[in-house]
Length: 242
Image (tube, rainbow, N blue to C red):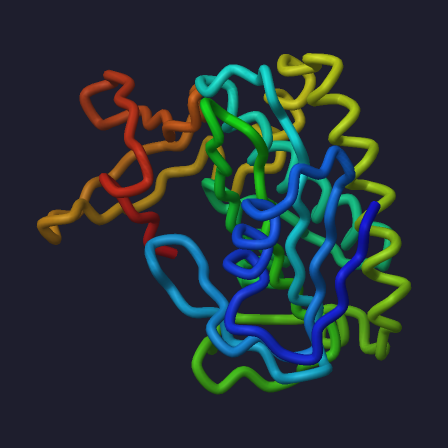
């Protein structure tokens, strides 16, 4: 793996997207930064991260020939990579809030942003990770937590990153070997509030009650509604309130 270490950048995903566009590298690329100025998350959200306290990085991997309708399996794999990493360091009550926020209890400890790189079809994927490690106070994200808050210990950032990379290659191999059934099952077992009555908000503000029963192979959330019918929603169509 080719590693690029930066003192500061706006977003490691943005940096890596430009970097990968200029190169024709068959090698995986990791970009990690001390300070991320404009970290991005799902739904255009920003990512709060105290410089030098957390891990903000992105990984580029070539996936030529991978079918576009299977890209959500990469999201599943990415979520499980982070869960395994945090579990190794003693974090408990880990779950995945659909599609790829990692929670400890009901507090967010990690955000993931996956973007595709196109070059005459699907060329590669960029996995962006914002993992809270040694930051104790979050001014703009009151529901955030971190490794130090969960374990009571300061953690070495390099050690946490290396552990993640071990998990990255474990799950990347499962994707390459088309272990989609196994990934799907493991992901659904970790789904936050699965099989529990929950409240959701639609884009117009209307509230909806349903039970998360799973996720479709293309990443849509499957809800069991009050009329006992199942309905699928994509990310822009529904928001879980908790």
